[in-house]
Amino acid sequence: GGGGLCVGANADVSLSNSILWNNSSVSGDGEEIFLGAVSDTGSGLIVKHTTVKGGLSPVFVQAGNHLTWGGGNLDSDPRLVGIHGRLAADSPCLDAGNSGALPLDHLDLDGDGELTELQPFDRDGRRRLIDGDGNGSLLVDMGAYELQVCQPDLGFGGPGDLRLSVCGEALDTAGSGA
Picture 1 (cartoon, one colour):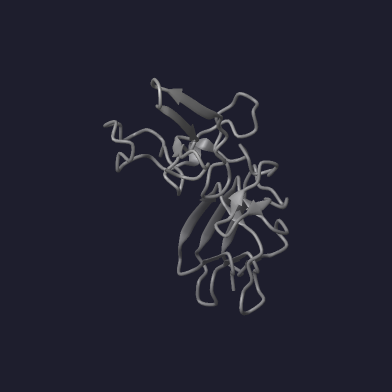
Picture 2 (picture 1 turned 90 degrees about the horizontal axis):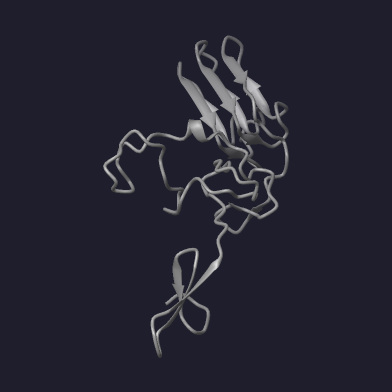
């Protein structure tokens, strides 16, 4: 069971800022989440600020295991686009995560020497905290990718030196990556 997440073997798991959508299990139990196994009676799962298709309906909890369904969970189409499942501009998952649940930057991914700050990048290596819904708050999006809301930047360094970038990526004159 558990096409999206399967927890067993006396494990304690906390799931935050995630999207479990359109998964299926071989057994048919717990299409999105399966908690526990026949011989397992001590597993626990906390789910917060996560989008789960069907809410609690596709969640299977084996007797003797414990599920905590925390705040901020959604049962709304996350509006995923592309093969990697990035959020569309009208996704309900924009700025709907819990920024405090981000892991710490123990590996100093941004090279600033600060190891106790929140992890600064998404799966693509782009800034993680962005005001995706335009309300002035920097909150994390649900899922692995942060919607990058940015404006084109036109640079002019003198005659013959015109540069255009979008979201920090340089474009050539044909509009494709340089």
